[in-house]
Image (cartoon, rainbow, N blue to C red; front, side, top):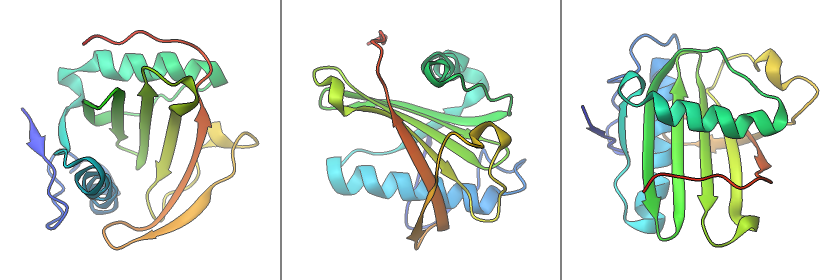
Length: 157
């Protein structure tokens, strides 16, 4: 079941089991606004259980940095803008991971992490990443970090 994310009226649908449902819905709406403003692309999510291959692809890319998350994925997104794949997973613990993978320009490939306001930094990040803070009208304070993707990956079209 597809859910089009509205960035004007935050909706927790699909995220209700998270203790950070409202904050995570704000992060999701923040992303929807970004893609609408920059690409005029609607941001749609799906229940993660319907597309675990997306979670698997993200896990494959995370292995570059020896990262493995055993959190419950709730929602995923998978779409393309121009020549760039965008993959998202929103986890029950308040973590959001996004992959931006440019098919033509290897310098434009990265994995981003966003933490909901009030959630603890997961132990998997300790000593590996520093987080920057950003204020969002939709999500409050978001803490984020990223890494550049170095390897080549294939994506289904």
